[in-house]
Length: 382
Image 1: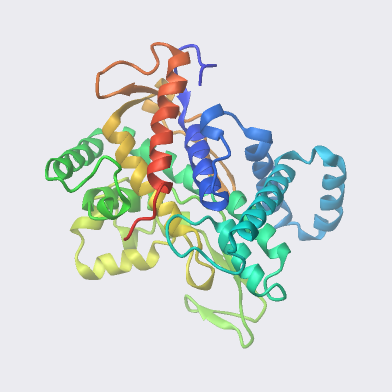
Image 2: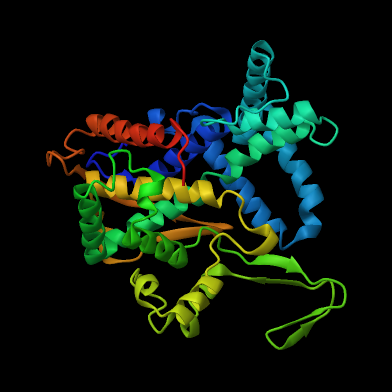
């Protein structure tokens, strides 16, 4: 952030840093350090972006995959971009966790209490049944968490904040709800997940943000089974690839109304039961069925804590371009904001975080770290 002379910061970048450190804590039991350094450590973010771009292209031109993948890996060499760093980090943490488990006599056992990281749970499964759940599964599970657990949440956090800043009345209502719950003693300083789940306007904002800007921007494909299938009064033979894009589904005016293109959280609070049920059936930011995102609850936890906490503690101002027009996005599976630039000011003492860009780093990082620790320091009941 200190590179910005006028104090404008890229919130899309910081939201992804936050999401990366949370998933690192959950997976390995320790943060990777994105929030502390404010940079793309070992090129992990860039590596994931490249892999997504590659996957989006060869998903269409699949016949080129075998050759292109071989050439791409050869050119990457041992520098290997960020994905190699993630694999090395996973193997390092797995080795450390194995030693710790042996020393404490915990082989084959799960702690069962507290914030036990994924690596510990994976190793417990491996130690009990290495034939069914091999070491490759342990490494793959940890690595997949890092690859899939940051972009989606970072995109959603940015989208919700963006739409709130574009609609001052929604922002005012959310702050009023936060203040009301805190005055009644229903919302603690840690903004506990079980508390924020009970805040109807906050949850409507989250749901509407996910409707307006689902993280995935390409169709979620399925293969028609044997015997074929009739979908929307049209028959598709077996083997046909079909899919639906959540961006299209979420803007269906027959379901969400004539204002489907508008950010209006109230639709989730004022609709009758039948309409609400129809909207919920069409709401698919995490997918549907057997391929529903398995990390959706972790993402919801992060969003439900970070959004109200930051809205309560800080004022945000969109940069000139964002305030008057639409932001730009790049869609390679994940629809990522580009240059989501804002100015940040603390609400408590009304001292701008950007008066001194060097201080801006430390204060925003400190706040993010407090949120991070609040999420991961102890397990919370629903």
